[in-house]
Length: 184
Image 1 (cartoon, rainbow, N blue to C red):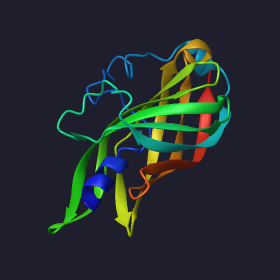
Image 2 (image 1 turned 60 degrees about the horizontal axis):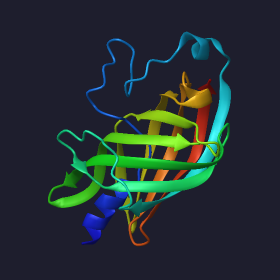
Image 3 (image 1 turned 120 degrees about the horizontal axis):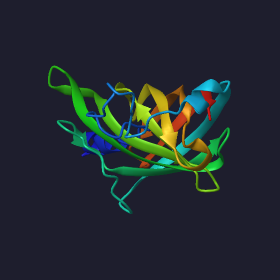
């Protein structure tokens, strides 16, 4: 039961790929092609943190393919360029074993976005990463690319790294140490 909850909470791993079948050949990610205008602007620092909790309030349309959908997570926090923000994610996982013991989860697909206080949405593509168990938590490092959005983030580009920590006993997860750049 504890490993199942940890697997579900690993889903709180933030951030984002809309589908592992995105068409990267023509430059789109999550159906969004970054605009030349955004790419021409200078990169600005992007930092912050988000705290997530498991929720059954919605179901993000995420194509998990061969991965296990780990549920939906909602978070709030503070991010540069967005201010007081919210975030929704749906991670898709596969277990990592050492012999017969599960030692972590591979996050293969993750649908995610950040939403600014004014409602502008920032779409994310999260590269696959691993969450490894240590005691009662799972941790990993995610690498995320911005893939456009709505409002002022319509042509957003850039990327960040962050530390994902999942606490299955409390149903919470965090994305901290966010460090990167954004163009919009």
